[in-house]
Structure formats: C-alpha cells, structure tokens
Image 1 (spheres, rainbow, N blue to C red):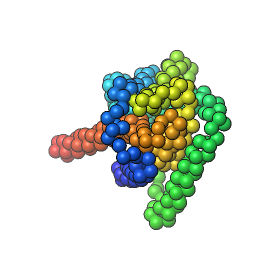
Image 2: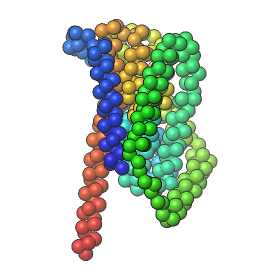
Image 3: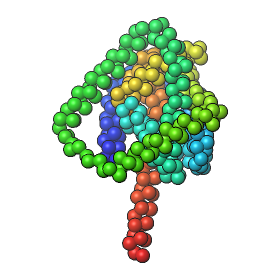
Image 4: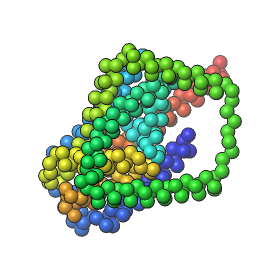
Length: 329
C-alpha cells in the first residue's frame, strides 16, 4: 500500500512541478513581488475561509451519515477524515483515493467494513447531485464559450494520451504475477458486500432526512470550493459579476473531475489560465493559477498527507507494541 502511495506522490509532484514550471516560464511577470504584495488581504482571507468551509461541509455530511449508521467519532476528527481524503484524491487518478482513504480513517474509529462502505457510497451519491444539478449550466457555459471548451478538451486529451502511453509502458516493464485469493477472503468479501447492500437499502428507508441533509451539505461544499476562486479573483483587485465567475468555473470543475492525472494535476493549473484569463490581467493570470491550485487543492492535500503518515506511524507502533506484549506474556 505504502509503495503505491509513494508512487502516487511522486507522479503528482512531477506533473505539478512541470505544469508550474510551464506557467512560470510563460506567464510570470517581472514584478512578481509587487503583484503578490498588492493582493487584497481581506479577500485572500475569505478564500482561506471558503476552503475551511469546504472541509466543514464535507465533515458534516460524513459525520451525520456515520451517526445514522450507528458509529460515532469526535466532530474534530471529521476534519482529519476530510483532509486525508483530499490527500488521497490528489495522489490517485480520477480522485479515486478520495473514496478509498476514508475507509482507513473511519476504520480507525471503530467503523465496520460494511458501514464504512455505505458511508462512502452515500456521500458519493450526495455529491453526485451537485454534478447533475449544475450539468445544464456547465453545458450552457461551454456553448457560450466554445473556444474555452476546445482548449480544455485539448489539455485533457493530451494528458490522457501521455498517461495512457505511460500506463501501457509501465505494464510491459513491471509485470506482476497474479495473486491467489484465498477462499476465506472471498467469503468475508461476499458477507460484507451483502451486509453493505442491506445497510444502504435500510438507510434510504429509515434515514431520508439525513440523506437530504447530506445532499445539502454536498451542494454547499462544492459552492464553497468555487467561492475560493471567486474571492481570489477579487484579491487581485478585479471585479466581475458573481454568476460569471461561478459559471465559468463549472467546466473546469468537471474537467478536473474526469482528468486522468492524479488529483487533476496539470488540468487544474493549465485549465485555470483558460477559464480565468478573461477576469484577470496578463501580468497576474500565471500567479493566480498557481495560487488557486495551491489554495483549492494542494494545501489541503499536504496537510492531509502529514496527518495520514502520522496516523500510519502511530498505528504501526501500536501494532508492534501489542505484538510485543502478547509475545512477552
């Protein structure tokens, strides 16, 4: 597991560094310090608060679903769950780690396998509502700005081709032997899967209000994410209609979501230039793109990564101490 995480971190850093280098060489102005020091501190603070709001609503939806399913943990621990999820989403293709890493963090606080799988499924469905509701607005924006749609598709297509080729080469070079799955493992898998289906079915029958709350929290969560960019544009002393800033980010949000790169790296940085260039000056667009990605994704991912490795280290030490005590007695 840890080997795959290290590979994911390396790949993410590689793509991020290359995209940041490209932006730095193409779009960073000579008066970099002047632009940074002239940022509106109030709106920059609002961007940070929007990021905090994003994690708060993410925390709330998982917290309420977990309680409804019968396992409890401190509310503050939910922020760690959210941050570790962001770390996982950032280092895995198509944000898959955002669904896998909560399994580890929730398992640590006593959640059963079937319960945790249900939490992950239910929060995923709640989040999907945002993408379904705003899909027509995203299409409308693409129709109004076909040149931006083409640029985003070229970015995604190029990265898809590069990563697809890299995956094929990797499969040829690093051949792995198929692992033999034991019968007991298959039995546990089948048992937990059936239990998971039963929990999900009963949840929709008994806890409709909780699921509705989870949908509301998901909507507010993604709106908070988009508010990070809106306040950051204002921090660069640029004024634009709220809906224009909001709706123009929708295609980028969907592009990052379907990106083949870990956490949408590359697509997010280059796509930000495409989406926000109409709202910012030529001198500030490069700095904005990097700041926006750091604030909206990489800051949380770095904090989440530290939390994850601290958790992992503690769990390994506890396991070793437990084994030592048992062997002693």
